[in-house]
Length: 339
Ligand code: ADP
Ligand code: MG
Image (cartoon, rainbow, N blue to C red; front, side):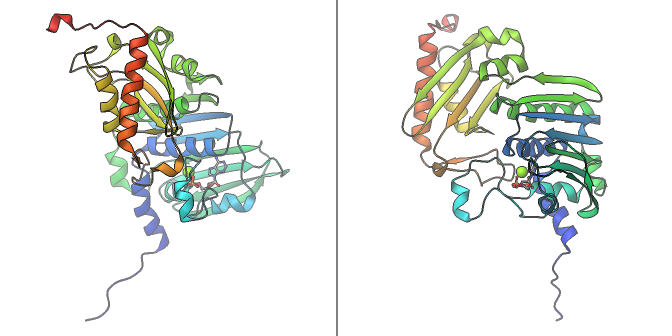
């Protein structure tokens, strides 16, 4: 029989890989915001149109890129953030796979404007379906602006699969919240179809929570703070009476990265035992810091899941710390009527 296996052309391989990273406009928002943070921006602006379906644009005042790097940034597995496999276990950046921009450029019309501090003049690059269309010198400020237009323009099935504008906007706002909460010292703005959605000045984490969720949130917060050799915990839980039947404000960050963890959620919930009804979820904003060598975040395409070397100790410490914080606030059990 004749040989039948062929290597896929690059643009096809890129489109397939893109499916892993980019599910919806919110995925683009997450990747671009994280790149801005990795570039050490102190101010980041997100502009979207039509729930991100026609435009997602992120502007930052970070490091910017050289002319060559601007081109390379759209190559697959091209990254400035790691050099070796060992670096995967000593990560200090959000990104490390060098896949996001390559994936995005495979399935959208992308425009990049960027300039470093050192160079006088910046560069303006356009790319469509993984093909560089143009690159020209441009007079732009230090930092980077990336516009992602017409997402999934070349994959109609994916485009049709997108949800309504309110649903896609909700996903975008969720991603925006996560990055903004993890980096309170960075100023963030968001505009949708020309109107302001958020304007968050540089602040501390309590103020950032209040700026996002409203001034009434301030009195609901119970501070949580603990530090041992393996784990540092900072943040807040909401007083038990502000728990919700639906999943509400539940945020875990590990080394400034938002993660989902049913296991850690259980640790916090169990610390609320006796203070909250069984069908009510506690709210929390918890920032965990661990040695990067003791975690693996390379287990999921969107990097929202994490593996701890010593998850039992982390569970126990988290539970004890939250319990202690609630106790210090003299919160009386509210469930007497259930006995
Ligand atoms: P990763 O973040 O995993 O490295 P990306 O595809 O997101 O992969 O980005 C590729 C590279 O492009 C980054 O490693 C970085 O060097 C550069 N880059 C991307 N976005 C920015 C930005 N906003 N500012 C400066 N450099 C950036
Ligand atoms: Mg990235």
